[in-house]
Image (cartoon, rainbow, N blue to C red; front, side):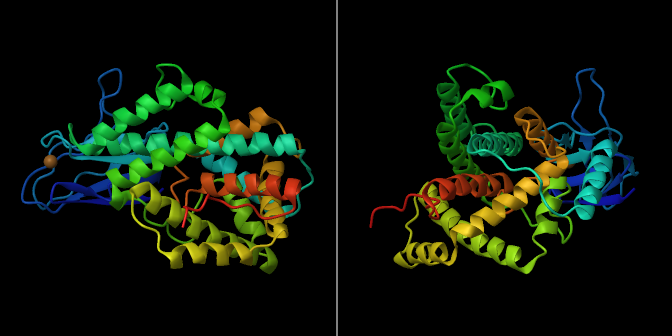
Length: 355
Ligand SMILES: [Cu+2]
């Protein structure tokens, strides 16, 4: 059980987003010259999961105990005196934590994957990863919308995105609707994910990338741990570093293109250099790491529904807000590995802009 401290300064909660667990407590320290409150949004029955009441200027709140795990959007709270003053706490469940710990234990005791997948199964895995990534981005974007004043650029972006989403799905459904997300072709989904990310960047640049987590806290999920454990071998670690450098370069080019900023010849040349540093075997190694995590978690048998459920559950605690979104990253490992199997060469992560 941990006690977390959130500072209130200039009418903002700092940090604006906190990750905590059931049973933890939170204290708000008001450094402003005015009074504030930290009051969880009212739930369906009109009650608040926590409410500090008035916190006087230069005073601390009573500790608030976190009793319930939050859903995908986290537990959003507000100051009842100041409209638009909001924060969010993402609360994991004790059961989730226990399950993750048990899986990490299993990964530590048995270090190799026993499952081999068909190309079709790899595709199913890839599709799941990209779906969850889009879902996770949508969830982040909902947060951003919750903080944005009405009539801002963000509200306009959001209407455009919802219209695109409804065009893709052919239905007037919420962006986070899981069955519909599952029915959309992967290519369309990927383009949509990029669009969503770009809008997110424009709307809240300071939230992109999110601050890195402290060492050892990058991920609380068993698959993330699997990557860390398998990457302990020097060869695997080197492949990971080469791939990360290649992805970063591609990511930079894409992001600048999304934002309408020029990519310099040096930036484009850097992308080619990074790509040449990678071998086809590197992707085999990286895909094997990912599969290692999954096969341990799933008991060695590939089951698309179980994979999807497992990956999906990870997003409930908001674990995928790494500087380079892990969902995107893993999806690229799998997509690239399929390409390596089929063509024997390392694929281009992006289509380079015309010179
Ligand atoms: Cu206030």
